[in-house]
Each structure stands twice: as structure tokens, then as C-alpha cells.
Image 1 (tube, rainbow, N blue to C red):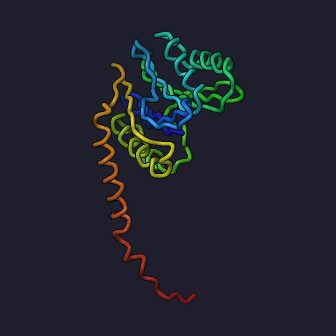
Image 2: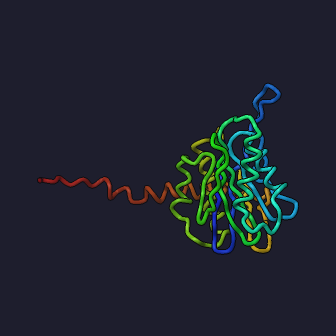
Image 3: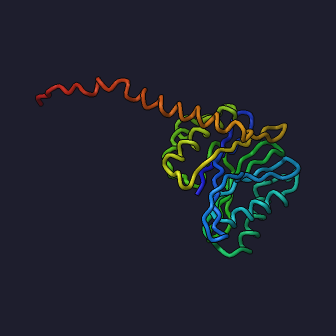
Length: 224
């Protein structure tokens, strides 16, 4: 399980998600944190994957095969995804969030299922993985077309707080930003500080919610 957000801002697009993985190939289930976002060597495309392992294989193919300067990237991404997905043994549905820098920053969602690959060009926001997680509220409530650094901060709150509702499937944080001049990513070294700030926000929000509790304790008799 994972949770990832794709966000379209006023100065580019962003992908924000968690980094928790599980591996049971050696017979023992082991948890570790590692990136779930792949980028190509040219710095023109990034793909976040969620779901089973086949989603990772499709994301690898997209980052390796997408040509720079593609006039209609949506069609080419879908073509690659469909070809690779159909060649694999079905192991469950998967979703990809694709950020492209050229010809201008764009965001796509690729769904991989029984019917093959389908793609949507995203103009605002999208969530994949543990989409029903109620921590997605912050992105749903506060999204608007604003700078991607601000959108990433909002989505980071959703990712971190999502762990409180699904601690067994969600953990860690990574942020990739895409602007006209290229991709940039958040240093993993600052994640603990960010998580501490979000935890402080969460605790202070509870205090704010209860600050006016006295108003709710007054229940006048009503004669109707």
C-alpha cells in the first residue's frame, strides 16, 4: 500500500508520496524505505508507481523509452504502458503518476487493470494508492492553482498524517518538483524535521478544535 499525490501548480507540477516498501522474498517480511519515483537520465520525466510489482516494471519502461520532444506524450505513454502491461502476468491493478518536463510541465495518471492501460491528462490533482485514506482531506480541501512548493507542503501533511490511519502500509516522505528548468527533489535528510513540524501541527490542530468547547456545553431547553 502507498499514498501518492500528483499536483498541478502555477509554476509546474509535483509528485508527493510515501517511501515504505515490504519485501518477503527471503521468507521473512521486511520493511524498508526507498523512493517510489523513477526519473530518466535526461531529466525530462518522472514516474511514481503504486500497487504490485508490475507497476514498477511499467514505470521503468516509460522512463527508459519515452523520447524527448514527443508532440503528443499522452499517446506515447499509453502505448508503452499498454504494451508492457499486456506482456506481464496480471498481479493486481496498479496506478502511475507521470510528470513530464517537456514540452512544458504536464501531469498524467495511468491506470493499469484488466482492460489494459488507460491514461488521463491531469489539470489539477490526483491521488493514487490508498486514495480512500481520510488524510487526503488536506489536499482536497486546500488545493488551488498555487506555486508547487506550497502544494507540496499541503500534500506532505496528507502523506504524513495518512500514516496515522494506515501505519502498516504508509511511511516516509518524498517530494519531486518539476518546473520548466528541470526536476528537483527534497533531501531525505530534512524528512525528520518536516515530520516533526507536521506532528506539531496535528497536535495544535486538536487544541484549536477544542478551544471553543464551552459553547457546545450550553444546551438551552427548547419548547416547540
